[in-house]
Every structure is written in C-alpha cells, then in structure tokens.
Image (cartoon, rainbow, N blue to C red; front, side):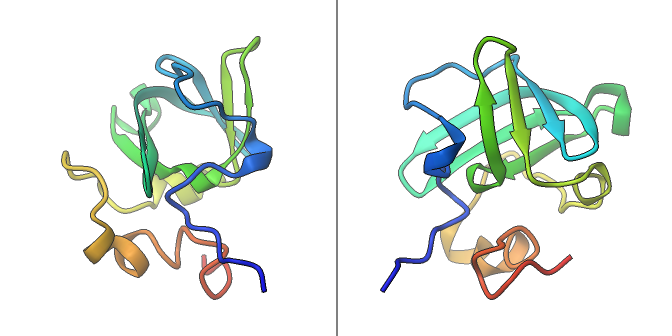
Length: 122
C-alpha cells in the first residue's frame, strides 16, 4: 500500500534539496509568472512557500504548500507549481502565522490544494 503524500512536503520529483535557499526565486504557475519566493519553511510536515505576487494581485502574499511545487530550476532561479494564475488568485488569504496542521488539513488548503486528498477539487 502506498502512503498518501501530504501537501506539506516537497514532491521527491521536484528536485528540492533541504537547505537550498529559494528566497527571491521567481515562481511560475502553469500559465505564467506569479511572483517571487518571499519565505520558505522546511519544517517537517509544514513545508511551504510564501510568494509575493507584487503588483500582479495588488502585492498580495500567498501561501503555497510545498506539494504544489513540481520542479525547481536552480540555474534559472525558478520554482514551478502545478496551479494556474486563477487558482492562485482565488486562493485563501494568508495569515501571518503559516499553516496549522490541526485546522488547515483538510480545511483551508485541502482538498482545494491537495490533489492527493480525495482528488483535486477546483
């Protein structure tokens, strides 16, 4: 039986190595650029990126669980995610505190964010 992956950890195929500084990397949605990485958490079961969207959506900062990252290109300084600009624009508001496992899963970020939690609901 395969263990269900959590949205709060990087996919092995994404190419993330613990300790790699992604701050300032450009973030690419499936349909274009959305901003830059402002913060990175590598805590066990709480891995996520905070992305500064700049003027694209009025300087909003959004939280993207690490499980949405599909690949990281160190040479290009880019992080690619499996969400569209519209999905990110319509994502839940970010509280300054980051995710809370007891209240966020499957609440605020799942199943909307979690393709492994009963399917991707958008």
